[in-house]
Amino acid sequence: MTDVRQPAEAAYDSVARFIHWSIVLLIATQFVIGWTMPEVHHDTKPVGLIAWHLGVGALLVAVMAVRIVWRLTHKPPADTLAPLLSAASRITHLLLYVALVVVPLLGWANASSRGWTVKLLGVVPYPSLTPAGSALGHRMGDVHGVLAWVLLALIAAHIAAALFHRFVLRDRVMQRMLP
Ligand code: HEM
Ligand code: HEM
Image 1: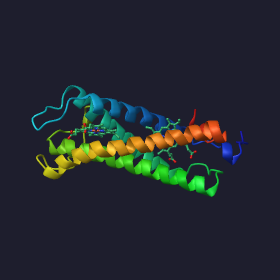
Image 2 (image 1 turned 180 degrees about the vertical axis):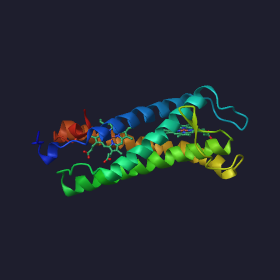
Image 3 (image 1 turned 60 degrees about the vertical axis):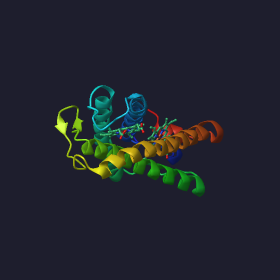
Image 4 (image 1 turned 30 degrees about the vertical axis):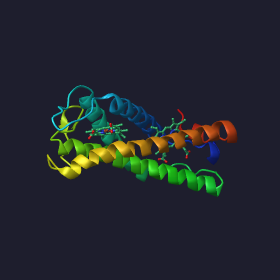
């Protein structure tokens, strides 16, 4: 059947929507585990909540890789926003993508510098990003923690914008990402 929706109502495709909400779930989990897991010291073992942070992190990296490939090969429907609003939305989305790549990579590099192997679903090992004992990799762990706050600020702005569209502008932007 032909899609008769107007561009303003056109939604992201179902794969993009599924991945968006999967990433939301994975990121929320990573924040909760990251904030509640024990502090990591030089002799800490990757067990318990730390193992969960690495495991969920490995899945997040894989899903983000799929997301980026999908995004590069499937353009989202054009928006019908005013130019300034459209530019603000594009910039925020770009910054979100950058943070969604950089924050996990820094965590992964830190894990490598501690000699921990990051494994997808506990089976498929990822390569080490930094040599075990690397001082740089160790510092990347600190940056990982700081940039997680930057990511959180971007997410807060993003959610505020979505709610602004839904309840103040009362347009159909929110529906573009809903099932
Ligand atoms: C966007 C996804 C992620 C978020 C939001 C996140 C969040 C956090 C937070 C809040 C902390 C605690 C920082 C602190 O106490 O200062 C942390 C620590 C850590 N994360 Fe993540 N993380 C993410 C992805 C990853 C991934 C993919 C990995 C590895 C595969 C990872 C590995 C680590 C490690 C090793 C630490 C301990 C760092 C240290 O204390 O030196 N994280 N993360
Ligand atoms: C961890 C939290 C979140 C992250 C990291 C995130 C990330 C993103 C990214 C990167 C995009 C751009 C998609 C693309 O063009 O490829 C996007 C779009 C979107 N997100 Fe989120 N999002 C989050 C949570 C939410 C929540 C909670 C809502 C609803 C309240 C929401 C609503 C939307 C909507 C409506 C769009 C489409 C905007 C448009 O049509 O241009 N997001 N999100």
